[in-house]
Length: 476
Image (tube, rainbow, N blue to C red; front, side, top):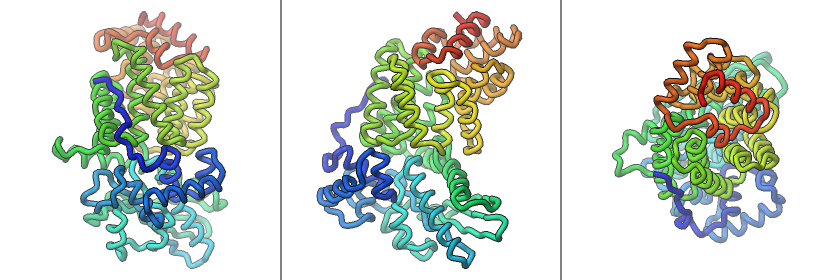
């Protein structure tokens, strides 16, 4: 079912800009950080917040976070009643007595909180609010339930002069059960570099399409009766189906994401994923109307960025769309913005690597992007390796391409296409023929020409490699 939900049922209390300011302020960003993200002055942020507080009748960040966590603006429900989980990041406890380590632990906690608010798909209670509660969540059960936290992150930090050790846990506030824990050891270095390194490690395990939080959400959604599924459930299940990159998965993703948006038209990430699903329709021959798929792609990604002007995935999606429409300068600008907002987010880096290899920019720049994505995210989903395979293909490193694609989604027609071409370049005629025949059998409507036009492939070296590879593999 190919449809674009409308946003008529979105809350009318706040404008899109006011909601963007409110969400970031509730997530713990400062006036300056919000201003930089939305390209407005800090004084304008302050003015917006005064208007927001007046419109919503809220008096502090806790009440604002309660509103933001519920699309209809009602007071936040208890953790057992919520349709979307809420995450609380408690201040990390420093086990060292020195004041410098207490400051370091607070800075690390704040960074984790802010980055999770940017990249995770669930609301995050503002760090300033959590700091008031302290770093012992077991002593604050009433407070945790009062602010509606479903999950709590806690941690302890210890330093001995040569190394720093961070132990961090994710627990369910309803049952008290620990859901995930990890220990990070880092050599002593300057504080800012150390803080960034630890933050990146935590964020990319928890956030992202295959992160711990998404996996917990999908498992919970699958346990629900179909009649009880909410917008968040449909979103998580839609992302899972989209990441199969198969025809059946794509159809299911469009349907599930559309259902999510019918229930909550303000879910920006769902619009972005829907845009990507339509882009897959366009380039993989999954739609009988490629032009219609491109228009749906455009409508979805534009709505995503209206709702969240700092979503890095939205900008990678927009960049590929711009190139598809012939605006290569616009594509490069969108990809630059994606990197600005997602330079430490593995999903964003993997998407940008694929775009650098095939769309706009220097394909050589894709190598450090995909390597960093794989380093940051030890739970790398199969599609990362689809992006990884494209990079050496354009560089003529066909054995590396095959090795990567063998870990990618084997349901995807473009995986089969690149495998056939790489084997052909290697002179492995039997393997190339096998991949070509499988592609034709499983995806008779797929064509290399359609992939080039719909992905789109506009980088000259990529175009040359794909055209020659398709000739050798007898794909067209």
